[in-house]
Length: 77
Image 1 (cartoon, one colour):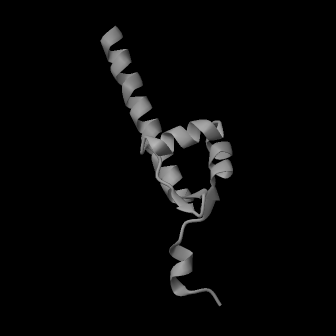
Image 2 (tube, rainbow, N blue to C red):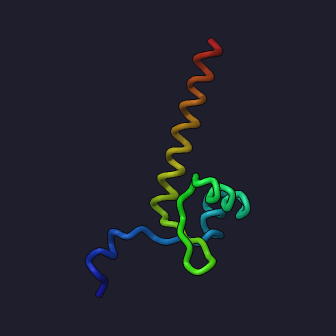
């Protein structure tokens, strides 16, 4: 039987899984972690990430890119 709170937990991803999911190199992901752009945590010497946090970060990046695109369009007209 699963604990009651287990359903609310987001799946945990490895550094390799997140890099593949975002389609970026693992080195690039490590740079994003060092700059504090992506939140992760270490278990021993290995990084782990909550999938919902990665998806939230990605959605924010998409929103900011769309906003920058709109600003660029309004300036060109």
